[in-house]
Amino acid sequence: MVTSFTIRNAAREDVPDMVRLINIAGHRLPLWCWGQLEGGREDPWQVGRTLAARDEGAISWTNGTVATLGSDVAALMLAYPLEGEAPGYGCEIDHPVVTPLRDLKRQAEGTFHIHVLAAYAEYRGRGLGSFLLDKADRLSGDSDISLIVSDANAPARRFYERLGFKEKARQTLVTAPDWHADGDDWLLMIKPSAP
Image (cartoon, rainbow, N blue to C red; front, top):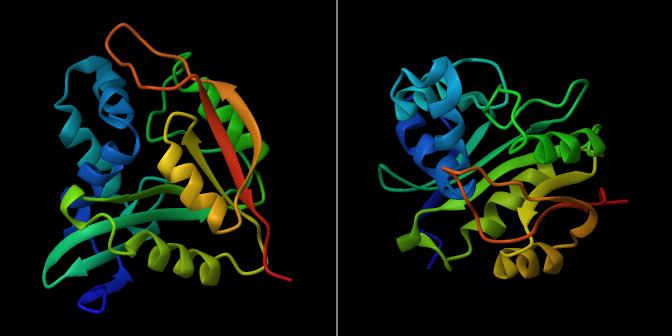
């Protein structure tokens, strides 16, 4: 039952869990990106924690909503309005791997963007995604809601479609010698604002 879970705004203390869930949602792409920053000289997990501990930016605890069970973080939604220059995916590098994601985010400008929606494996299938997306509906005001998902993630796509998201655009998923994900394309999905 979901009634024992609490949905609340993230706190800076949630950063370690946030970073793990960001990496899970991103098919390990965030960790790969964080490893590219600072010339690869820093621990990529620490780079992610440093980014998420900031008070500003897309990858920031201030944009997080968590589902908790007692004191344990079970799931995360990281979401914010997309305005102006599309922020990177926690990876401020120029690399062909991240270019398709940035292009899709540019096409979603003006939406309320769900950057991450993820739960730890042991908490999946308990309705937490629906509860977090209900909060996104409230936070989005009169803006459409956007998210990006791999075409290989059929269960997530079906879930989003049931909630009113429709594919708006796609870009080829680009891999690197040291990073690969299933799928051929990244899909931009949009849910129109409620009338």
